[in-house]
Amino acid sequence: MPVLNEEAVHKAVIFGMAIEAEIAPYSVFARKNYFYPDLPKGYQISQMELPIVGNGHLDIEVDGVSKRIGITRAHLEEDAGKSLHEDFHGLTGIDLNRAGTPLLEIVSEPDMHSAKEAVAYMRKLHELVRYLDICDGNMQEGSFRVTPTYRCGQRQKEFGTRAEIKNINSFKFVEKAINHEIERQIELIENGGKVVQETRLYDSVKDETRSMRSKEEANDYRYFPDPDLLPVFISEEYKAEVKAQLPELPQAKKHRFKINTLWMKKMRLFSRILASWLIISKPCLKNRVAKQSSAPTG
Image (tube, rainbow, N blue to C red; front, side, top):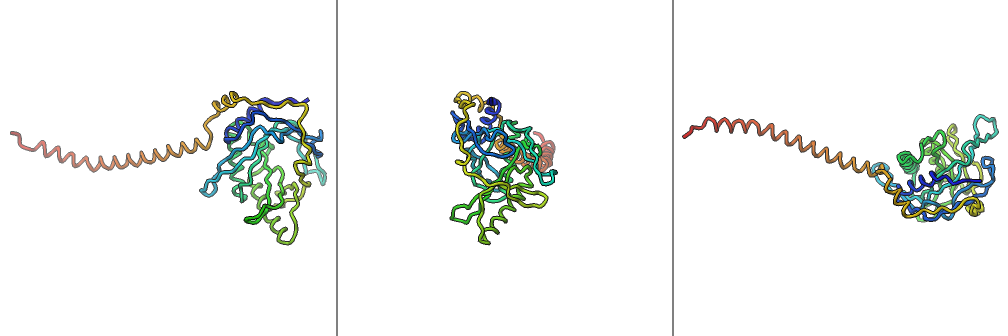
């Protein structure tokens, strides 16, 4: 029988506080039903209608311009296994060592309009979860994975069909994969083709994405409440306790350091001006003292 990991709940609340998100007082675990070789049970324990973390945001900076990226939700779920496609000569291996471990999935708003913005956002997110000790951020081991979703659209029109690129573990490859997907979808549409809603893989050797499987809609997963796990209740007292323990966040700390640096620069400038004034004034002061000492006394 599955047992809820209390520390995973605690870290999810910490993350929610850090992005100024809504923390749900009541959240429910659900079974996400689908078949794939890395999911032996045939379903994944996740959250659907009532996730633990609601709307939040994260600010990024690209080329000196600040931009706010919305975060739709962050929900707890169990990790699946890992499919291994390399070194098997046309076959696929399955690694189930990480299956069942707690995972916080963060879903972002479509506020990024270039690969550069997406990478800046991912780096900021990576910095935050490591700073808060929510995750070690080891991308090579799969502790921090990225699944970018891209959909091509024209201005003043609805965006087109989305395609997601599954579990990329390098910021460099994320940027390359997104740029390749942008070119692929534009070329496909301009040639009269149609983008299919699917999950794709990025091949870093060939620098291309290729189809992995069709992507279902939410109702295809047949979500229903997990009967083995009770709902999670989070009190206002618990939230206040977590918030009180929250350290100064990286953005606030950088802002404080920046202000202090500017203040120090001003002080150094003032010190230089003061020193120059003293150097200039010193000979004048000496001359004045000499004149006063040589004046005849009554």
